[in-house]
Amino acid sequence: MKIATIIVRVLIGLLLLFASISFFFKLAPEPETTGNFKAFNMGLVASTYLLPLAKTVELLCGVAFVTGRFVTLANILILPITVNILFINYFLAPEGLPIAGLLFVGNLFLIYRYWDNYKTVFTP
Image 1 (cartoon, rainbow, N blue to C red):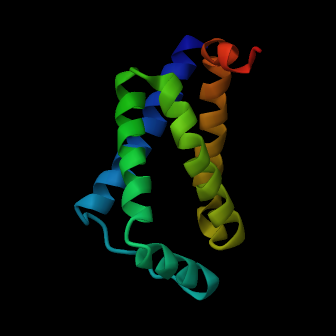
Image 2: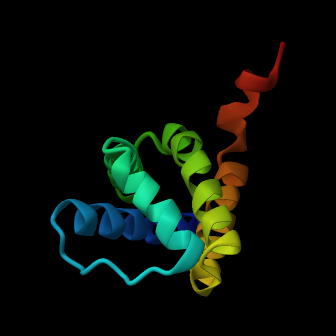
C-alpha cells in the first residue's frame, strides 16, 4: 500500500505541476470552449485573480506531492480545487470528467492514507 500511495501522490503532483506550469508559461493553447462553459470561463478570466490563485495553489501542492513534504497540508489545500474541477467537468464539460474523477478519487485516497495526521483536527 505504501508503493501505491507514492505512485498516486507523484502522479497527482505531476498533473498539478503540468497544469499550473502550462498556465503560467502559456505552454499549451487555450482549448475551444462553447456554451455555458465558455461563459463560466470568461467569468473566471474576468475576475483577474481567481485563476492565478488556483494555479498557484496547484503549483505549491504539486511540488508538495512530488517531493513528499507537507502532503497532509497539500491534501487539504487542493481538495476544494479538485471538487470544483470535478463539478465543472460534470456540469459544463463532460469530456474531461474521467481525468477530473481520477484526480478527485486520488485526492480522497491520499486523505485516507494520511488520515492519522488529521485525527487531531476532529477530536474535541
